[in-house]
Length: 132
Image (tube, rainbow, N blue to C red):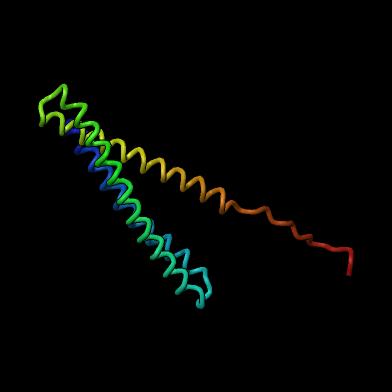
């Protein structure tokens, strides 16, 4: 991967990470604020647990994909290039693959969330009723 692409990818991921931090804190606070006081503690505990589990499993899965893709790509590139060039190519290719996997998981999560939490149509209340 050329240095320019690596710098642009790093800057994009940095901006994404910082934006995610700012958005998630506000979203969590506003989500928890609508709950009754007796449920806030349990909801906060559940949210923290799920966030930590997602981080651990996400890092483990993306890390294993990265290592396996890099190993396979390095062996392929080594036949055609010098060792240093093969390492750079395999590293860049592995980063691209895990970015695509992470993007797929994010899109899948958004679609699932939209489907699950789709607003249900509410019955219209009649302003005037003929029955007493």
